[in-house]
Image (cartoon, rainbow, N blue to C red; front, side, top):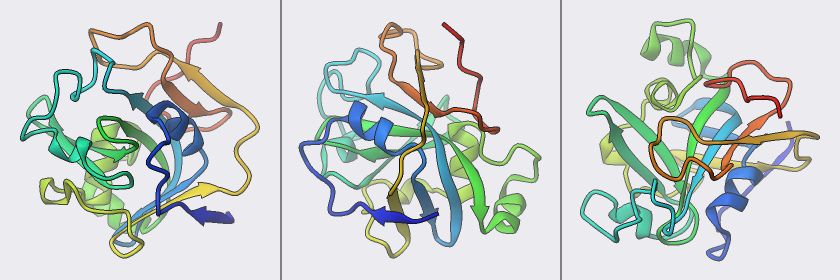
Amino acid sequence: MRQSQIPPFDPQLDAVSLARALIGGCLIVRGAGGTIIETEAYTQDDPASHSHRGQTARNAAMFGPSGHLYVYRSYGIHLCLNVVARPGEAVLIRAIKPEIGVDLMRTRRNSALLCAGPGRVSQALGIQMDDNGAAFDGIEFSLWLPDIPPAIILSGPRIGISRGMESPWRFGMAKTLGLSRPFRQA
């Protein structure tokens, strides 16, 4: 899987474009990771976004530099890993295909479903709240775009939100196992 590391990030790249571009890319966190197969985009004018009402202590990393992590706790339980696009916008990593450090991921997850869902991805990769705001700098956190994007990228409504549901900003790799949920056929 030949790919190009993307930092430094283009600070003008919006979250929707980045979410689509990351499909087929590679994410590695401290020696564990794999191919990104599902993402969701969140923009500042999106009512489902944490940045919609402006900057707070909780979402400050989302307003930070492009190419950094935005980590938050969902439902008080699961950590979710996001990539900051331009300030106020981020891409949620919903699923990856485990390929690197799989034994380590299995130890962390102790489940057959390693990386199908954002909470599972974060647990398998060992993401912690202290990672919030860290850079994808190729040391602990690496992120690559695919040299050749997948032939078919699926698009549909995002999952688990109550506002902004009409935006088809969930993207996934066609004909792959491990998505958090199937895409509905049009």
